Amino acid sequence: QVQLVESGGGLVQAGGSLRLSCAASGSIFSTSAMAWYRQAPGKQRELVASITSRGSTNYADSVKGRFTISRVNAQNTVFLQMNSLKPEDTAVYYCKLLYPQYWGQGTQVTVSS
Image (cartoon, rainbow, N blue to C red):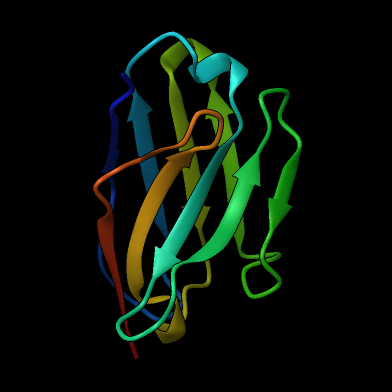
């Protein structure tokens, strides 16, 4: 069983930054790809960024150049650095371990204009 706990969400003004963290329990973290998803009110959950066990990354077009996903396997933690935040980035952000699939509980990010 794997538990994922997100932290770092909050309220920020447009143009500001936040850093999300996702701490994982269990020994499979270092061998599994990880991802961040988000879900805005009334919208489907969407992939924001992903990172393989070796550190290769992929981003949604909407966040390229603004968000950075990273991981520290020794700490069983994945991060999402979010810069130049926009009101449309407002959503609940979820951490996901991809293989096998586990979800965190989500953390709210609100960007005011």
